[in-house]
Image 1 (cartoon, rainbow, N blue to C red):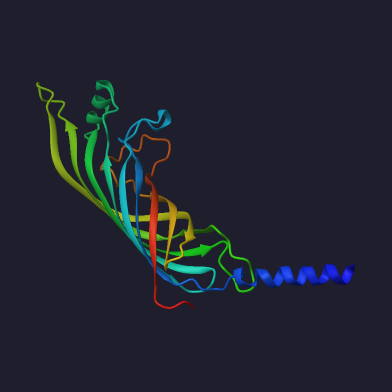
Image 2: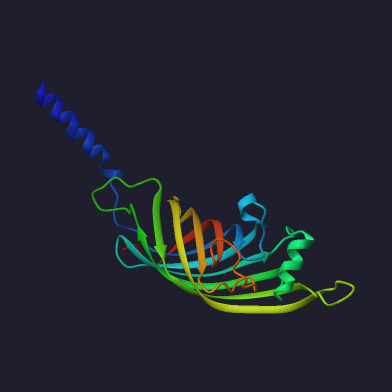
Length: 231
């Protein structure tokens, strides 16, 4: 009985052999699109979930270094808009500090980060259906906007619109998951958190919010094609 059971176990394990994975991840080129929002001094009332949700778009390239690590470069764009969330009293307080109370425009950004794959395919192991990764890096942004500011000493309470821009460094954090397709490609989802330590994304530096830094949050769906040969 024991010998029969042993034979059956061996047959079962041998039948699983075709699904044992190999370390065959390649370099990848991807494009992502999805919703995003901004956390700034004049971007809404976040505690009440009153803020603009707008599109973001990015392209990335991932270079494999080891089974667990890639280097990832990302170029992206995010639409930004303050929305219309403030009453006249709040607008007056912002104008007293000679700051804009509203804006619309775009943020262009680029960054590089190491990516750690939590559960990559490894030789001799059954592959994971969904693979998860995370990373922390460093980048540079350019924020191009049309700002709006109330002119308090104008008897008509005129609002002035003017072009504005800012640039600076940021720290991106990403976590994502993807699934390999039968073709040489994969699909996935990625959450990105962009932290601007110098509060320059929205052109307003009152820093009256709970967290002083400006931040972008993105949720993008990705399609990536595999490049080159399998390692």
